[in-house]
Length: 191
Image (cartoon, rainbow, N blue to C red; front, side, top):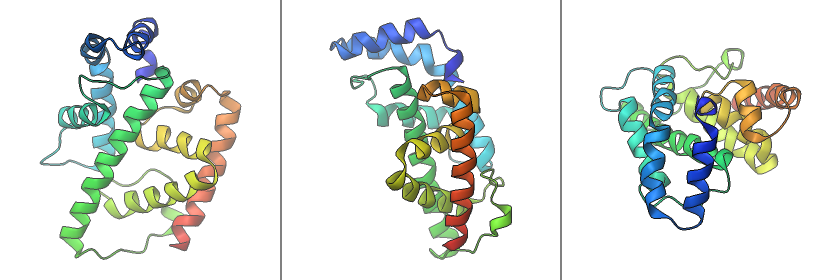
C-alpha cells in the first residue's frame, strides 16, 4: 500500500505543495501512482468487475477529486492517504448508488446481519451502501473509529498500515476495529 512508498520523497513533495509550489503536485502523482493503482485494483476486486470503471480510471478520478495538478496543502502524508481513500470511497459509493437505482428502481434490500463481516461479496452494492450509511453515522459519533474503518474497508490497508497512517498503536487500532465492526453490524442490521 502507500505505506510502502518512499516516505521521504512524499513528505518533501507535500511540504513543497504546502509552500505553494505547483510543480510539486505534478511530481507527486508519478511517485504515488503505482501504489494508488494497486489500491484501486484491490478496491475494484472487492466490488466485483465493472465494465465501465477500471483501476486506472478510479485512480485518475480520485486524483482529479483531490485537486489534480493543483493539489491542496496536505498537512502530512497521513492526510494525503486518508484523502485518497476518501475520494475512492466516494467514487465507488456514487457508482453503487447509480447502479442500484438502475437495477432495483431505487429499492433497498434487507441484509442478513450475520453476513456482515465488513467483507462484502463481489458486486454487493446494497451492502456497500449500507456500510457507507452506517459509517457516516459512526463518523458523527466517533470520527477516529470511522477513519479507521475507511482506511481498512475502503482503502484496503492492513491493520498495521492503518494504525501507522493514523499515528496510533496497533493494539489501539485492533480495539477500535473490533468495536467498529460490532457497531456497524448492529447499525446495518437495524436499517
